[in-house]
Length: 103
Image (cartoon, rainbow, N blue to C red):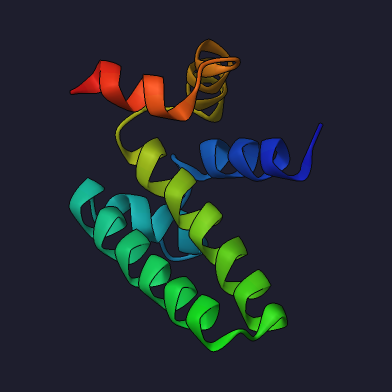
């Protein structure tokens, strides 16, 4: 299992946990909108570190972004497997062609 798969499994397991004992459960209990807000905050922090050029800080913030992305998706019952399947579907397709097909 990859670290990302392990993280996704942990998030899924915490969906029904006590919000007083789990940060993930606490986020999920606040609903999808709060999870999305937290993801946005973390994404902005990653952007700031990318602009600053601090590799270690960007790495840390990128890990936070991935965690909060998976929590946000879990709040809407989208799994890492769902995301991986979509990536597999797109494999071999030019990013320009894929973007043009969407709109």
